[in-house]
Image 1 (tube, rainbow, N blue to C red):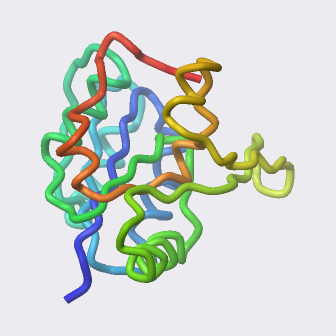
Image 2: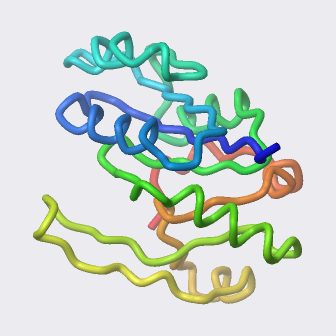
Length: 174
């Protein structure tokens, strides 16, 4: 049996981008996934999109929250996957993202997290590559930088069990 992968999307008034994000997740070539979307009581068309795709979602809710970290935490607390990742509501996953990451994890059981490069830009075809940079916990503390592109990161459940959920006072950390 293929391991279960949880994908979490926090969202707030991102209806313009949300459907493309949803489609990039539900159309993954790797199928053993649970998709959780936590919406912060959007006033745009986000809830209509969540209802449209509700049969493809393991869980969704639209309610006020205390910011992005709080929304992600709500998703983390619902997550049951052996592997976990989150992508924001204006990000997309390439079709084989999950399949390739699980294959990498299976080849290296000692690895807890994998991340890599991401294409960034306002629209497809108008992007720039943001490189994932090798780092360590000590280096991140020393430089106060996190060179891990979140939308390319996926980790084993044991990381969440060891570290716990996000600190909700940090809405965004660059």
